[in-house]
Image 1 (cartoon, rainbow, N blue to C red):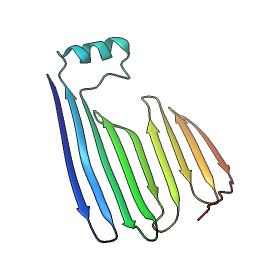
Image 2: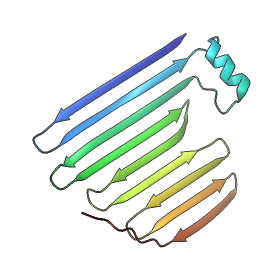
Image 3: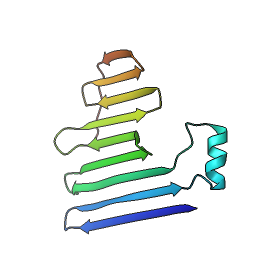
Image 4: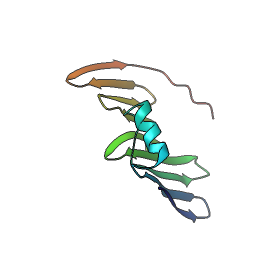
Length: 134
């Protein structure tokens, strides 16, 4: 058995709008696709995958946006993306794998990334200059 559920909410204002929702896909262990995924790789196999998204234009005239996307496979959060320029322009990305985690954060003057593998952590900071044309 396969089950797909998508819930969507929209709010439209005079100078802003918001789209948020949840998409969920559930597979039964006896379903053919589940068996194929488990045969190919245990990393691809899932019983439940959920996507939560929040897409918001806070102010159209000022071009202020707030975007958040979260993806969860069973109980493991595998993707977390946040992009905003409401207060300060930032981009944050978190990707989880079964044995490692990759984190990225980008601001107008600095970019940081971190790769965490089991008990080993590699940290690095670099300074970047981002040109913004308006």
